[in-house]
Length: 392
Length: 248
Image 1: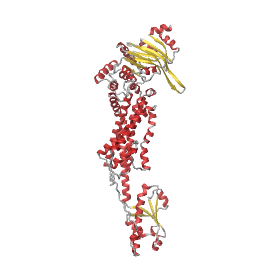
Image 2: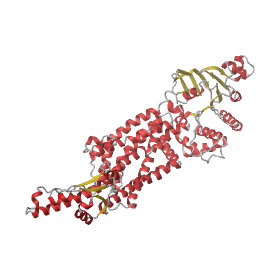
Image 3: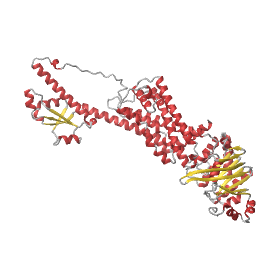
Image 4: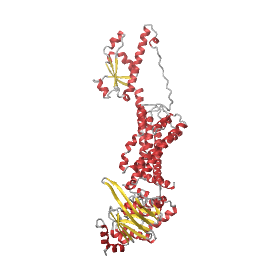
């Protein structure tokens, strides 16, 4: 036990004296991730506001055929533009988000009381760019169509309600916390990834690096049990990773305070209790990552080989996020027992401000610690191999 | 005292199993310096690794102060001061911190560590660099730090694998005196070397290893008598059967 503490202290001292490692873990990561997230968030919010409230630039083909419609659109904050020469190409190359084409026979049909044709030209493969503008122009045209239709019915002495048998309303029951945006959907993955491989440098350095620098053999020749050695190295890695995550979370929160989000509720709605919950949720993942990385570093024949496995590990925490993105499912209790999937669900609950029951906690933490224990046994076995110290 | 009895060890290689150590036996006594002499690849390092419990012998046994390495490896490691072939020290720690780390791992208290460090630093002439971080240490400074760290717990038995490898003349000389000092304190000193002159100069007892076997074992005088050579150098060459790799 005393040896464990000695090794833990030495590994942390060694790591904190490594300027590059400290710089990456406590400056680069905590700055880069929140800035990117907050930046995209602010950008998205500004674009949304522009598309919703700014005047809509709308090239119109055949504007002369429907002067009344064009005038009405102008009154609705739409700015008509002369049409480009090749409409389809202009939309496809994103020169314009959306173009309106008015049929030559518009006037004729209008006067005859037949549906007059207008056409919205857009590129559906770019919903993020043009979706808002398309929805806006569609809404305007529907509104115009409805109001003229109503007037026509009244002119013929028919009550307009006859033509609307249904009145469809909608009510959104989401709580404000649950209406979070894109950056917060990425947050669970980022948290899990950081938790999982945040200590990678230290873990690989403490085993594969120690062997490469020829100091593992003397260490193993001391009376300290190998189980104590790996446990200390795993704990050092975990503590380092947790500190890095704490810095990142604080920076994340600060980033949203500094970067204006443009009226959209993008605040990181988690209070101190939520932060504590997040920490508890990712704690087993931190341990799992540290143990797995240590086992890997003991298994690999060299530092480089150990690093080679990292892309594979980075993919693991991604799986549940991807699955949930493609096929959202209702949370069931067994899911909480699956590493990464369970933590992903719990993080989402914290972010949405939902309750986590004692049973949920027990299942998630219990299952995670069983997995950690199993990987620890593998790591300990690997540390007992004769090749560990002598193959370098 | 270190007793090695008929140990064997083989390794898998692409061309089949290689018998690295094939029935090695010898005894290293307290108050003596025992030299393990043999050309590179003779099985010296593997023999020592079995001795300090990093490898398990396939047959035979090793006793350190009467304790079987196989039954109580932790107790054996506490009684051994080991300078392995790998002697990396922690670059971001000072020489003193490197030594203290191993002292704590050996279960020593703070005061004990400080006392031993002062003694070892004086004996190994380390005062110049003891407070410096090990980054940029010379080979000699690294070796001295590694030796001090190996001996911080004041072990009765000292095992050194090629201690003079890569050292300059002056450092080799001071290391030689240091080993003689250890012998004077009544310790059991066992070191391996492929440099014949060094072994001849220092050792009370010489164990010559070639191809995993002990080919000669005795005091320098006994070796000369057994091989019928007046010159120790000729005696070694005759014992091994070749002079390959024996000259520094």
